[in-house]
Length: 463
Image (cartoon, rainbow, N blue to C red; front, side, top):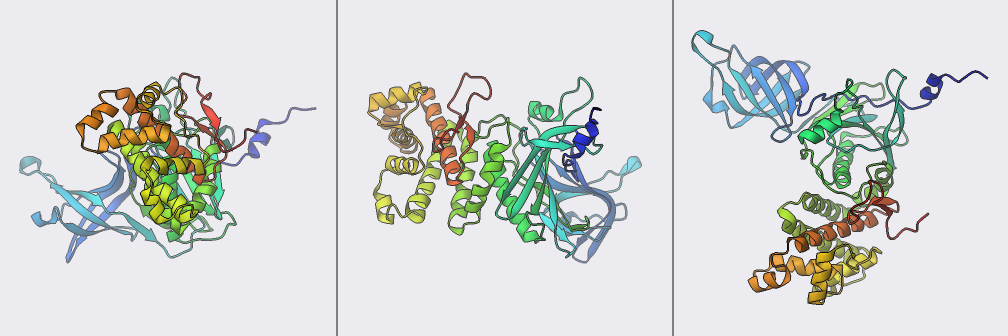
């Protein structure tokens, strides 16, 4: 029997998504437009040549820069809302002029106007069949197989999430460079900078059309979900909507809050995209629930900021406690009616957290590996983890120096462990609220080979 051609096998694999915008170097600007521009400020029209681009540093912003040789200088243009910037293709965006530069004398140059492009969108009015978006600084994962444009190579780089009538496809971009050259993703990590690492697509699971409002709402949800997975701020940028014939019908220029690449812990198992796929449906159900949308937004915000150690480990502990209070109220009072409003308010903070963990089937005992917390609990007769991290938080927040010294003193290890345990609780509470029953990366497990820290969530039975 003749050997089967390799291309026959590859042809059965879906093709990889094609990004509209791409970066090939760390912190490289993403060019969005290059050509004729007109800056319109009231009755004044300033023509010129220039470009619009996404710049990463110091923080991601969309900016413009144009040369205007036939323009009479106006000082008052700088530092005030400056009208709109029109492109030759008819699109227009609101801008804010931040600077004007030129030189005189023998080497005189034309004035150069630069500024910031306000968040904007352009639409043709045609319905949207799919949206392509770009994600910077998301982590690598093993996913399902896709083939490249030539059909000669395949990669395990795709995650497909479905829920609420949506299908979201996320592909890691190929990172292979010339021989002996570091992969692009590794370069971004080493530099601690920015670069587009993934491209995604939004579409209705049944293939139906949708509105720009629907696309923007789902992108906002993905921003929160991907940040929860990554443990720092990441999310969709530079979204382009296409109609059923593949023609552009909508585009959004919005520079979301994106964090420079940094190493942080999170619950997401980086060896597999399964966690992302399995968490999406439950997350989306909570997201579209009016009673849960705001609590989820706030809790995820506090989780990410705490995980990035905002305000040090002390600030991280306080932020986690704020999330516990909010989620406990939302689940125990509003969702399940386990407690009345008055009954909830009368409970000590440790009891609120204890009830929240119990309702989510999460163990509350202090893990034996946390030696500083275990010793402090024995010295202060703390009964479990909720009481331990609440006592540490109270000692940080309240003003009595004697209590601060008695509870935490100069023990940096105790503060660190309280913060780390709080993050572990918060990750599990959120995963439980999202009906996640898969495996997660347990941040409390140390000193093992990569992958050995991956466990089944405590409320699910091992297969």
